[in-house]
Image (cartoon, rainbow, N blue to C red; front, side, top):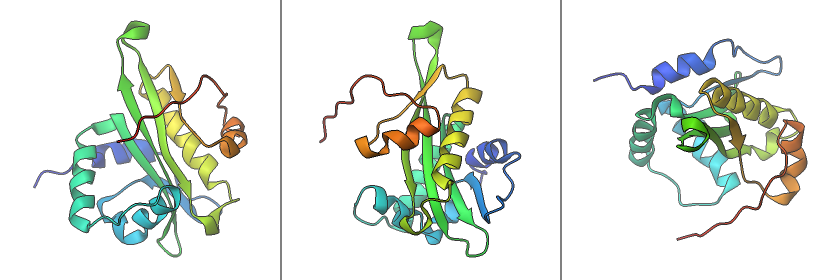
Length: 167
């Protein structure tokens, strides 16, 4: 079977990541991360029905085919192997700005037991670096009002209004 594109993206995104002094390593999502608490982590962000392993692997393969235009990063605790934080960036190719690109930061979450350790900041900074490296002219995100201060710490500024239409 052909190796998923995510393996290439992982090595590019992981270059120089290393282990943090706190024992957490920021790295790209891997196929086996469902067993390391990835879905439990996402449930802290937005409650939803649990994923089956087949559904997880199918979605992982779909996202891997997008190559470097979709990156999910996780913070893994070296001693336990459990995931303590995650976030994603999606690169939107546009016609405006001379066919520019925008990085959409999504699904940033830190496990309740690991908050206050700077993991969210490290993940977001790496996602923004990835967007910049992909040629994006900006990175944007939506967040709850109580998280504005956190995102301001990593360089985001409040701009415009978010609207949503849910199905």
